Image (cartoon, rainbow, N blue to C red):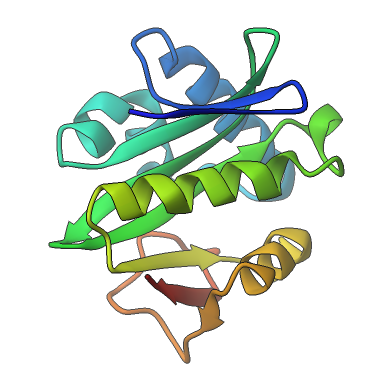
Length: 160
């Protein structure tokens, strides 16, 4: 779809072979702060079926061909996507990779015709929540639908 190069970090859409990196990146961060839930495992074990086949997209951030971040857009309604499974590898955090990746993902969502992005997070992910706020996401009083995740206690949206 699109590729953007910013100071050594390349943000691009998913391609065959990214499945293992998508799994590893998500397993690492979720396991560090939470327990992997059945919905996590379902999505990260088969992103082609649970994200791409349903009209969604996965975006990757890499340096020198090594995946250091990812983020999914899961189709939830016409023109609406859930922003999910966003992470940057621990040793790549703090350098703006997450911001670059999220900006890229928002651009990809716009290209896909999105008018709204929705996300669920947890207060333990304070840095991520702060980034979402900086890029225009606003807090919602609760989930739009019953959450698949026990850990979800922050709900946000971005109108495009």
